[in-house]
Length: 323
Image 1 (cartoon, rainbow, N blue to C red):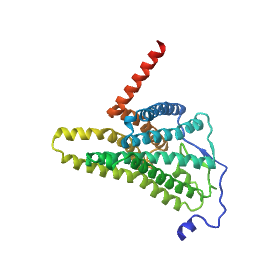
Image 2 (cartoon, rainbow, N blue to C red):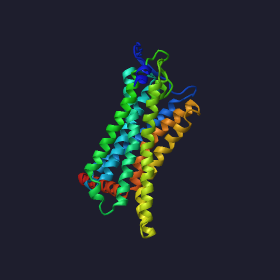
Image 3 (cartoon, one colour):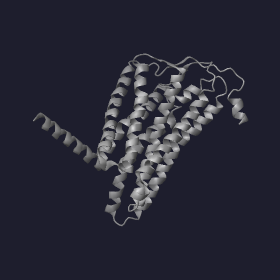
Image 4 (cartoon, rainbow, N blue to C red):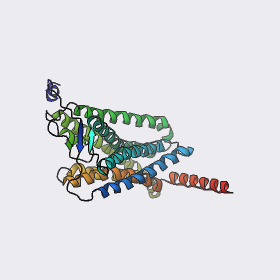
């Protein structure tokens, strides 16, 4: 504790700037077209995730624990895209590179909370698949709507608390060197490196929080599928194994889409060109929310049938109205 008190700069005068400057890309001509491309991805993401959420709300047959987790993932995808992309457009298309100190910390909190919740929602879906395959006859007793809601709520509380702790350590930094953030948003790493007092506590907290949020759900998902594989190996026929495994393909696709780009950025982020890092990280945070709803609509039979039924009912109502 004494180390943290001294490292946080006790008895110093904090320099809190009025604003930060988001630098973004450097030396790339016509970079605005890239952000227009991100805007197109954002529109697709909003439409897809709102469709999934609407289908789950309107179809009472989908009021099951699995679809509570799917709804939560769609909500987080929608929230994360909306927290990130509109602000990026404002910064880089309309040249509003200045962002106030408090707004920057708020922007950071919501962006990282939503991105982190994506991994924990994937862990909740892995838990659901594990219980469904391990206990097929007792699944509805062991996994209820209430238990799934409690699990997701606990994840929200855990993630928001961890991110809030990381943000609170930033408020203990004195920014007397520069106010230029070398990223495309209020990124935690580039921000704490601007501090002119000891940034060791922020660096430690960043490492602990980011590793926990990234790897704890990932390890749990891997362990879950090891358990699923073991359970499927006990199934009598090959056809039953294939049928059971097909229920997991959509989730496995989501896990791959989310984790592969982020692992690439974390593994090579400091060795690649800063502009390439910005592109990689921005795509890693925007493409998964766009693809998630399409994967679940295409690979989940219940959602496809529900969507077809709702579209059919809407079409029939339009015909009746016109007549």
